[in-house]
Image (tube, rainbow, N blue to C red; front, side, top):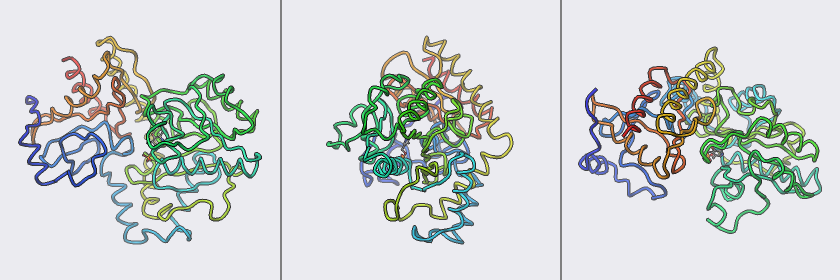
Length: 412
Ligand SMILES: *Cc1c(COP(=O)(O)O)cnc(C)c1O
């Protein structure tokens, strides 16, 4: 392997000359590279630099970049039917809804274009359920540090610090409990409570698991008070945790479950799944122009084909064990706490605050031009915490390479 060639200022300006990024609204800190193509676990930028990608579009690329199965499904579907319209049935949406309900044990499905929209739909469904069945109850208990999306209601449901004042006033009706503290939930239950909503593993908070005992206690509490248990599986669903659904670890079944991210394998689609008894939308209550269009449903079906194939989940678990062992060895060496998470949703805590961004920058900046050392893309999900969400079909060699790049970088 050749020595690392850090990004030169000349390379930045060359990329930005061809791609004047100032024409994009500046809503987040982005590294000085413009990505142009990918394949599997690999991503390339406009200057020909290669990156081993453990971010994968923020945990959405279930099968990696540009997977042939999705490319074929999209191309075939694009030549047949893209969208018949939300006022008509299409074959691909019906097929996908059937598959998702059969796989989840829930009865009905409503498609959306994103995870936030799926949660927004679940929130509306719970409020409607409260109107129809619970005397107008509307409060949904959510959790500190939760992340449910960036619409006004899902930001209000989130417990991310700062979300409460950004774009104030918030949407009312989301009292916050503490994860893994059932008494904190019980204390919030009142006549207006209609549901409890949570992630089975808090992703954006830095991979914090809801324990199995907590999930079971929540299910019991919801049953006692007639509350809906709504699981946001936007990040944990579709095999990310090594099982098809995050809830399988606790055996607790939700009344409502939301999906996004991995469902489309990078193509934007989300879904709300619910038990039949919960599905109380009247005609006109809920909808959306692009919802359940045939194009994205075809992509999601291709993802389901892949994750349902024999050996797929077994690979997620083996690669998870391999990555976790390697990360745990690094954690031990740097005096950090054991790795958190399940499946290929893992987080490494770093010894010092504000190290995560620096480590992520260093790993990425190692990328040289064609033929030289690759960069490594990891997500500094919190100032002191790196998140690893590779493609679920990552190979053992790729995990090993990622670990060696990480190990040598964190050594310094
Ligand atoms: C990413 C995420 C969302 C939001 O999904 P978008 O597609 O970005 O709207 C909601 N909930 C969880 C748990 C997420 O990880």
